[in-house]
Amino acid sequence: MPKTKRRVSRDGAPNLAEALAGLEDGTYANANQASKATGTPVQTIYHRLNGGKSRRSANIHLQALTPAEELALVSYIQRVSAVGHPVRHDYLRELAEEIRKQRVQTEGKSVSPVGKHWVERFLKRHPVLESRVAKSIEAACVEVTKEQILAWFSDFKKTIDEYGIKDKNIYNMDETGTRVA
Image: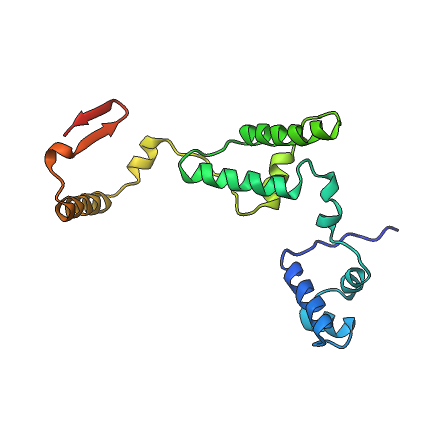
């Protein structure tokens, strides 16, 4: 009967790093002691001490993008989202394919599209990114309270008074264009 796979907890990596560091600096006399102190399985400690890799680092060569390319993509997504342009999953897939195409063509290999579930796995690898359902402007405006509106106009009035801004230099802009207030 094959050995059943155990679920790996996300907090195991810091414990493993602590166990390996403790063995290196002499905090723990042996792997068994490090295992008991950190809660890391002793087999994992021995595996890493003998040069073994984590599943993630061992499978990097199977990923569509290199770690550096993924970090660049994450950085781009964060910058674009910060200015109010959320990235849709299909656009994320296109970006990944373009990045990959540039690298693979220089290596002289044929390019196949990224996998069906690539976006979901990418988001799982990078928990700093998260998917959200975008709200329409009308729905977002409904959630604004009267107190928030009054506070905004109060701050606006303070800013005008503080900097001595004249009425002729105040403009209004919305979906219909620019108008002088």
